[in-house]
Image (cartoon, rainbow, N blue to C red; front, side, top):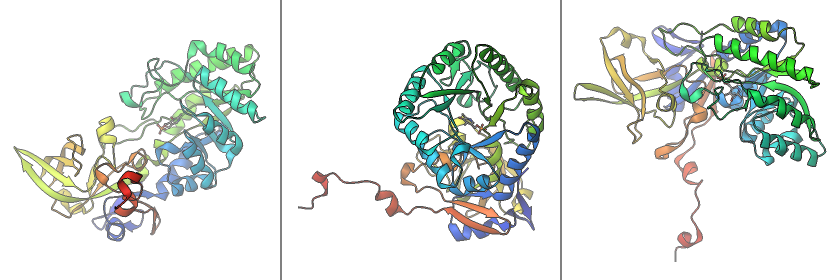
Length: 425
Ligand SMILES: *Cc1c(COP(=O)(O)O)cnc(C)c1O
């Protein structure tokens, strides 16, 4: 469900004609629909009403200040994985006691910044990290609330590069080692043992892996409590998928997900946290691009567009499929042919779609790359000296540029010449 629809033959973002935005900001650009972000948050929150969890949006999915502020106003907390994300959350007005710090490689400086900000808790991923956090906290006369991120060795049946809960993945602490590490944590002055965390992967399309993981989590919490640990909090991670293809079955509904959480953990009197990312912003965004050239080669058809892998890396990085919609609906009436939609970047891996059935699209035609709201703009870069793609947020009939396109001068000005090259003599 999202708010990008054809109206009078033209794709609209909520009530705004996408061509109007293109004329104002140029292409390519990301466009997000407030109504979709808000709806997904509300549907998710409502599914969990009875369990009353803290919903911490995973900022890494889309960390634009406007997106964070939109969610913060609905009461969302934030899951951050770096000091940069922590600062983004604070800058957007998120209360520190709704922020959870995750991630496998927090530096001591990042831990200090988070402690000073007064965040809710840390999800710790290794024994040395536990010692580092205890040291940093004790050195500041603070106690850090910790949950250990447990790797349950459950295969979430998702793409190799977004699987995080198998024994061979770098994330978390092996399940069997958890009791020993909780014992260590309990003895460290700077720490307050507080919870258990799991996050088994992203774009998960079935409930069975969650069911297995939450069952293991339950057993662990019961065992830890029996050993005298005061486990009050369980952070279940994110990972619920969104549909990327029109012919794909819908992923599980949040209410079904809530039911398995309730079954596994509902009677344990826990303060729950959930960290959805993609589910909230995934299909709330599109990447709008313009056709530069048509290039038939050797029986193949290349559509060269002005967006590239530096703007949206998911097809290249994860073999991701994004639907591609012409902005003018009438194009869809024409005959379809297999098309490779590629960008201007000098890499063979620079494509947005391969072998996709698309109608003939003339130079200058606008296209929307769908479901690009999560892990899109946040992964963009400036390879080939292409300025970062701008971001636009729509609300009803209005739109605002929420990250302007930097100029070429801005980009060049990030560099400095060393003294031996800068003198003109
Ligand atoms: C990335 C991440 C999430 C969000 O995952 P989604 O699949 O976008 O919901 C949640 N928690 C942690 C720890 C993560 O690293």
